[in-house]
Structures are given as structure tokens and as C-alpha cells.
Length: 409
Length: 80
Image 1 (cartoon, rainbow over the protein chains, first blue to last red):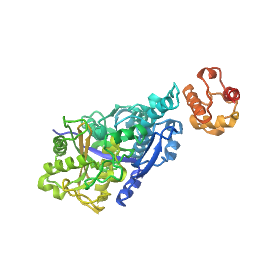
Image 2 (image 1 turned 30 degrees about the vertical axis):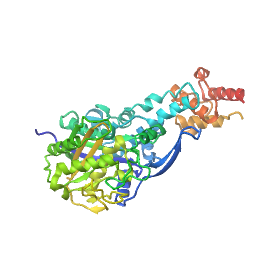
Image 3 (image 1 turned 60 degrees about the vertical axis):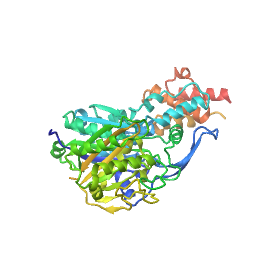
Image 4 (image 1 turned 90 degrees about the horizontal axis):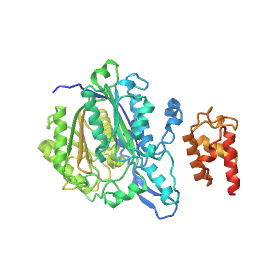
């Protein structure tokens, strides 16, 4: 089936590695780790404390945004929405679409988030349960709803087309980007602003991940021996997708072509991955992109650093690519910025496209040595590459998988 | 210690948010485009910062910043 080609004309990111894609990719190229120990508490009883490595976003610089919008639209945002607005504005600005009439009628917003505004939820209920209050702030619901980011994107950017949130845990933004791609292919819009975010470095979220025994207490070491789990990050990443015709007609910068999307479900377990789902999504993405499995690719892995994910992902890559796997290269940028959950797929696609364009693959950090159960070609050091295509994997809790393929143009 | 007018105006400036220089006691909430929802945010901030509890009903007749300051200071004086 032939359909409209879709290209990327803008990208933006906020993470522990910095605000903006240039700062973020420079940090990745320099093999800088944005993860560091944090020690926090909620309330002041000294009991509800939490500690460990995390990827914290530094206070946002919203000077340029406030200059354009005024301070009020940016006040009272949960960090989830604040990260989203800052990342999306960077992408829309790079695409040269701020204030463009296309935003009013022919633009869609599809945004991923694993959960809503955790900080708002927890501060509201801390007030009730720790301080004995019986009322909470009237903005609690509007700030915490999982669709708040996309509403703020619509308001701040002036987007009046279809806008909604997609939730599939750690694959949320992968599905958001893929579904945005199909909205353009199907002719439902000419531009789609897509991506995702997470802001879950809060007490309740933290102890939840600890209870699952999913969190490393030392570092994020994807595909390494003695890896102990994931490290939570926070932030957002955004892309402006556009039909090729629309981008060319207005002389927009084309950063990549988004050519493939595969989505599948394991139908297996709420936390344990099953390789069949991952394999199916990767194969589907290649088929969708018309990209042969023996075409050399850069692989932006899901690479969480949990013992099971990295093993299953390695097996899936071996099964899909066979002998051709050796000509590919696997990166795992969660080792630098942490796991952005709902924003993970977006930041890994954005940094992967930046890697293709810079012809540089960022190193996987913190390895203690090869794991015989993860025999895949890993970028152990930052290195020059010549790949023309990127495969970006996202495999979520509950067996929800999204794989995206982008090509250098 | 009773809360000062400046402390109250600082909180309003931060919470709405609005340029501090625009905030003088004669200005009406309407002319400053301060909605009732903004005022509830201000009340929550006053409680968090100064332990000052103001109910929504207390502000029912407040039209200007001066009215608001008077309500807050009366509450503050009654509490101290």
C-alpha cells in the first residue's frame, strides 16, 4: 500500500542531560552520565524519605517561552506539563511552525505519558494524610490528569486539531509517535506534534518501583553483567512530524524520514516481557518501512538495565536479525538520562536521529563487562558510524511494544 | 507576628503570577485579571507559607487588593 511519506522537521528534549537537544546530544557524545544520587522526603516526619540514583531535570529556563506567552500560561503546571511544553516548543520552533496557520486546522497532537502529574497527586494527598487537612487545591485534578500536558500544548501552541494522550507505560510515546505517523499517512492532518513525558521522581512512584524490585541502587548498566535494574529519569521529548509534501512546499528543514512503525502485544504477563511480542514489533516496523532485515541499522534499544529486559531484548534482536545482527550497533541511552517511562521512546528516537545525523553513536555507560546472555553488538564507546537507518525499540510493562524506524535523508 | 501588606502582595505576585509592580492596594482584582481560582491559589499559598487560614467566604466581598489585604491582616491579627 502506498501512503504519504512522513518526515521529521523539529525535535526538542528536556532531561537530566540538559534542556534542548544540542545540550542533550553534546552530553551523550561526551559520555556524560546525568544520573546521580538523590535524597528526598515528603512531609517533614523524617519517615517518608527516599534515596538512590536518578536523572533529575535541572530547573527549566522558561525565559524565551515567557517572553512569547507571558508568565501565566506556564504557572501552576505539574512538572509533567512543564517538561512537555518546553520540549514541544523547541521542536515547533525548530520546524519554523510557531504561529503558523497550519496549527489551527491541519495539526494533530498525540502525546504519551505513563502516568499523570505525580507531584500534584502526592502533594495534594500529603496535605490530607500527613497534615490532617480535609481540602485540597482546586487545581489538583486539572494539574494531575494524564491529558493535562496535551491540553497545555494545545493552548500554548494554538493547536486546534485532534489532540489526545496515549498511555502504554514505557512505550507510551512510541505508540503516540506511531499513531501520529498514521494520522498523517491517512490524510487526517498535515502536521503532528508527537512525543511524551514523565515526571515521577516522587515518593509514591519511587517506593512503587522499589517494591517491584525494578530499581538499581547503584547505576543503570544496560546489557552488562551484574546489572541491577533501571534508574528513573524524568523529562520530555517531542518531534514535529509532517508530510513530505507539506515540509517541502514550505522549505522546512528535514531532519529524518519516519518510515516505519510496528506495534504488538505480548499477551503474556503484567510485568514479565515475552520475546515474541518484541520480535513481532521489530519485524513489523521493518516491513512497514520497506527496510530489509539485513540492511545495517543503528538500534536504539529499550535497554533498561533490568536483568530480564536486556536478556529478552538481546534474544529478540538475535532472532530477528540472525547473522546480520553483527553489522548493526546497539545504543542504550537510558544509561545516561535514565528511564523516562512515558517519554522514553520519544527521547530515544530523538537522540537516535541526532546520532544518525551526527554520524556518532553515544557510548553505553556503566558496563562492568559483557553478559553472555546479552550477545549483541554494543556501543561500548562513543564512536563514528555511517548508518542511514535507526530502529528504536520500546517494550513496556504489561507487554505493550512499539518500534519505530527513521531514515537519514 | 501579623502578616504585612508586602508579604501578601509578594504571594499574589508569585501565585497568579503577575508583575509585582502592578500590585497596589487600590487596584481591583478585575482590572488585574485575577480570577477567583487564582485567589484560591493565593489562599493555599498563604496557608502553606504563613499558616494563615482564609476561607473562600471571607473573600466574597473583596473587590480590590486593599480589601484582600484587610481580610488577611484581620485573620492574621486574630490568630496571633
